[in-house]
Length: 128
Image 1 (tube, rainbow, N blue to C red):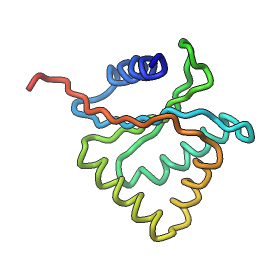
Image 2: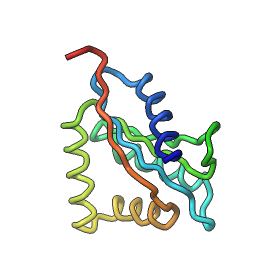
Image 3: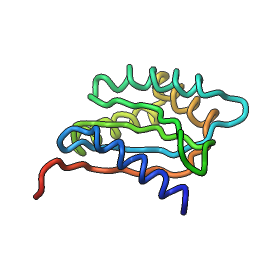
Image 4: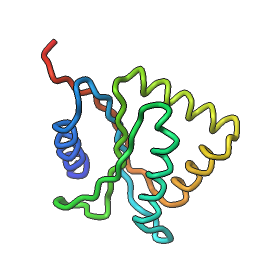
């Protein structure tokens, strides 16, 4: 429960930097012993290169205050939920089709992380 509350607080802070109607997806994860944070940061750089065509950006967040310092967030942002859907479809289709870039990134993610949870948020700057 504390982990989810911590993640919610961090994501709340993320949304304060979000633009109007951003779609934000976050994965809470730990790093496996055989990997290092630099492996995850490099993975994020490569993901951002891939995601540029879909206007998606990712960032790794390191906990500086909280009760689970071994946990990290990998946050992805797109302009809206539709853009997320297009990116998600392209990603999943590439994995199924065995495309090398996407499969290499996915395999490295699985080799280096233990995912705790994943969430998605849609931000609004204006009231309905």
